[in-house]
Image (cartoon, rainbow, N blue to C red; front, side):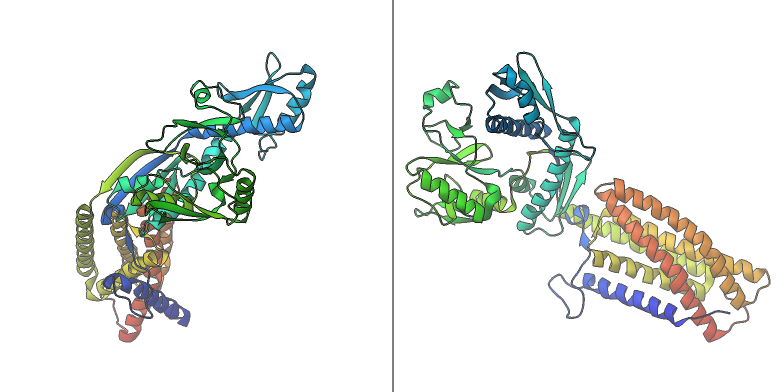
Amino acid sequence: MLALPRWRIVVCALAVFLGLLFTLPNFLPANVSIPGLPSQRLSLGLDLQGGSYLLLEVDQAALKAERLNNLVEDVRTTLKDAQIVFSNPGVVGGDVSVRITDPSQLDAARAALGKLGTLSQTGVRDVLVTTGPDQQIVLSLSNQALAADASKAVEQSIEILRKRIDALGTKEPTIQRQGTDRIVIEVPGESDPERLKAVIGQTAKLTFQMVDETVAPGDILQGRVPPEDVVVPNGETGSPTPAYALQRRSVVTGEMLTDASAGFDQSGRPDINFRFNGKGAQRFGDATTQNIGRRFAIVLDGKVLSAPVIQGAITGGSGEITGAFSQQQVTELALNLRSGALPAKLDVQEQRTVGAQLGADSVRAGALAGIIAVILIALFMFLAYGAVFGGIAVAGLLANMMMIFGAMSMTGAALTLPGIAGLILTIAMAVDANVLIYERIRDEERGGRKPAMAIDTGFNRASVSIWDANITTMISALILFAFGAGPVRGFAWTLSIGVLTSVFSALMITRLLVVLWFRANRKKSLPI
């Protein structure tokens, strides 16, 4: 009647053993590890450990402006390659406009420019080409293209930010997307959001561009600059040159860097040592070989860091960036260059700091609430169902909690204050399953069934209600996890793990314990 298959015993024993194995490291001191035990520990979220919270938003206006400027260069290059005479390419009213000098080349120009941009999944290009008055051709970016650029910028930024924050030595940072163009960053243990902003807020877009020596400083001030050049402000403090006219085409970009580290120059001042990959080293070597005696500018985030004169060919693929830097500045700049440039500027929309003491208070309050919940539930089960069945329910509850902590430690989940609420709710739901089973067993015994039959029927019939209740809860938890953010996801994750372990402990562990007890005692009536 009460079957006790060996696989059930093995599965229950293995689940409890793994739960205990992954839970134990959480009760050891932080600097103590035991050989053979897993090293994963349950990490505390921002609200329990203290730290910094930032909400960043992609600057879509800057992203569009950069895309349009790049499109202007693409238009210039495409028309030159097609030997089409043109004039006045530039950004006008949020679009790119260019005038075709020869009317007979208008159709050829439109056909050549129509190949710019990329094809969407529907086969439509993201750059729209139209003809305006006076032989003008206008290129516009579609709304889908701008949305795709913002989405791609968020994805790239998340990876770059993760590299930068990991380099700070912080543990378990949370970096995730919110909506279409926002990023949420939670860094437990980091109490200085300004330091965090200094590292992650810099775009770190590095380029090496040749200085146009034919343009005089007066021409720059009056805006008389060739269309192939761009005016870049000088970032060197105390320099008499306010800005430089640089060739638009970069010799080398920061994407070709393989390493960047803080160091010191020959005078003992902080500087940045860098190294290019093979492609960057070749291009840098060719540029310095062909331009000895000319100046090239090192540009970071739209400002010239320095513009040294090329004294000789630099073919080794490495060099240094000098300037009026502090030691902290070169350390942070080298970190950002190693991590890569952000695809777009990120604006801080919200920042919060949670103190460590406030986090410790939350941990104590959450632990106290959990202990009170377990004690009250255990007391209720003993009073309602007696020492035997109440004790089995409490044993299943403790095994359930151990499996929850073990699963969260194994998956690297962070426990948050809402997560503690989800844990306490899970405890109540686990006992609710026992209540359904025990009441069903009572009803079966009152209906005249023998104890063995009452136990078997009670578990079988109660399991339907237990599955229904927990499946609906799991659906809700999954929806919260999919569409929520931050603490909401922490609550949903803890609740999801708790639902799975609660069903397992009620239908597997509790049943195993009840059957083992009955086989050992063979009571004529159940003490329930």
